[in-house]
Image (spheres, one colour):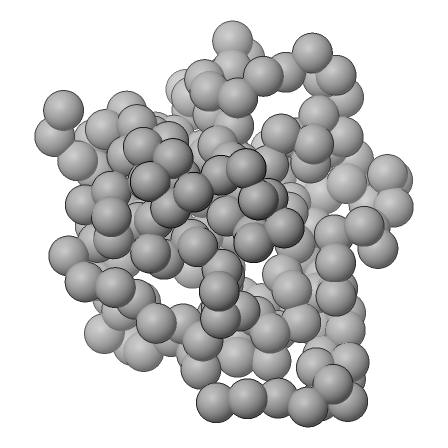
Length: 189
């Protein structure tokens, strides 16, 4: 499946529904959906995004999810059945995260905290240190587990899987994602 530039541009500001089930233990949080994700209605859908290959390499999924043309009902059920959810700090789709304002990130961060308190996952894994610092006003935050908790939920910052984050590899992403999956009880240590 492919899209023209005009088709993708028409997806600007669209929302991608959260992937959530009733027993979410591990909630992955992207910065915001890209235009390809908005076009397909699936998180981390752009071909070349390393999120799904990293989840597979980490053992979090038993098969490589291909979200590039949308997510199948079977994959949605598989993920939510394993206690895995996906949302974003900012809900609206853009071509790049650089299009988001600082205010949008802060407001999105507040909304995310409220949402996490409703959902009650064991672990939240925010993909991207820069977005985390901006959304939650913590300029000193580093990757890994954060000292703060949101209610009973442990908060982690993991690497962003975008191809723009060139210093990360599928293996380094997989290691970080495996760590949060173990912390959430999705994978055995």
